[in-house]
Length: 430
Image (cartoon, rainbow, N blue to C red; front, side, top):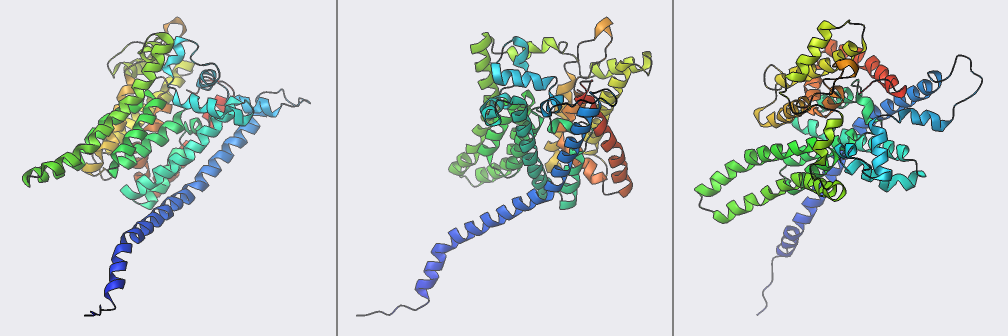
């Protein structure tokens, strides 16, 4: 006997079978549009600030290095190498010659490894390779930062956050051949994926951040906090429902946290092969820093220096800049928890990372200079605060007020130009 099917049955069945791929394709297209939108949003700031750095490099690289009305000329090579100072040289040395001495063990391997990998593409010019890596990584970091803040807050806050970070006085290190940009990219991507429960991708990004800078290890704490915040309510529900298998599935993302300290373990293994000392990265600090100290030691030393010495000395000017950066971001971290611009409770891990980063930077004060003058008790503080993205989000939230926005621009831009020219002329910047 022939049974006629209703005409709508087959099409509906087919539609049901095809709905999942169609939905996934639509979601992917939407995600691409959002990320492309974030890229277009940050591109003007990125391009303009890179142009400003090139202008400063040109004028500073010429006018500050030749006598007045000198008839000769400097080469493009000479002008480019005005960026070849301090840690840039150390990264380049590791990239071309490896870890030639114990003091180089303080510099983690991922960034110089990338320099060595791309060095051939730039004719053996390791400085140019490093600067390209830094700037490409910074563009990627800006895109991730914009998307992160856009999702957590709003578009306007995301726009101001990327702007304020890009013109912060020490943002020149995102242009120089330093590892700041690369670390910022992996660290932000770790936060972004953690907030979305992509545990293994977050662990991978955290591990790469740790291979870039030792402070990446702090992301292990953030991972555990985010995992507990998101998974504990689900685990309690699974236990109440007596679903042990579901509890096990929910915990499968936890081992991904071990990828973060794995980055440190890989570096320790490399150092053991080279120096027969897996902790060489800590022992190398004796070349620049004193031993472990309470976090208030370095600020107190800086304050004593400012009070006791003439305000027109190098030590005082140096300490004022570092101490200002420290105090500014301590205040911004407090504002993450109190006041009208405070974060929601589930966003406190942003500020937690910032607080841990500040404390970490304070634990090892700088070695006093000639004559015992403590000219650098807070070494590189104004550079380290670049990683505290929560502080820039608070600045951006405060920036809704036009007077605050204008004040920030009027202070940050000339200070950025000053520190950039300081760096180009090999005067103290870091």
